[in-house]
Amino acid sequence: MICEAPVRYRADITAGSLKVAESRVIADLLLKQADDDVWKSALHEENVLQTRSPRTADLFALLIRGRLETMTSDLWKLVKDGNSTIATHACLAAAVKHSALLADFLSLVVREQYRIFADKLTYQMWDDFIADCQNRDAELPEWSESTIKRLRSSVFQILQQAGYIDSTKSLRL
Image (cartoon, rainbow, N blue to C red; front, side):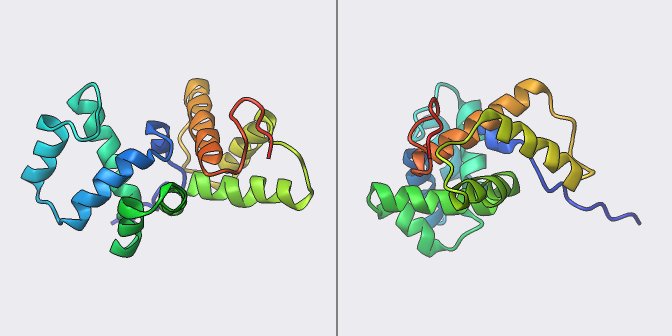
């Protein structure tokens, strides 16, 4: 039997940035230990995530639940009940734990820019990082240029929401 190693880098982060408001809803469902019927009703009939379609609700719920389930119920409480800053940072912690791509970009690129007192990030830094990821992970799928751009957009939105950069336009640290 051949045991395949899991792919280190996934593109699922393109489904959304931190989505703090939606994460509060999902954290509440997790804290209530909602069963499958309650989840389906909340997402599809009540439209608790305020999406345009059930498919989008399922996509967001899958991403957010996956992120939050990497953490304990103590963090879920912070997401659900914390003020904006606390909830945002709790969502960031879950997103970093869930996504090796985000974690490594923060660790390898953003941290280095802070260390050298750089004033901003660049798109070229993202492109170089993706090339390095392909060298680190031989199993990394060949992402299209549009997927790489969507990944960059999601990661930079997360950095902006978490306060690492002032905007996704300037990329100023």
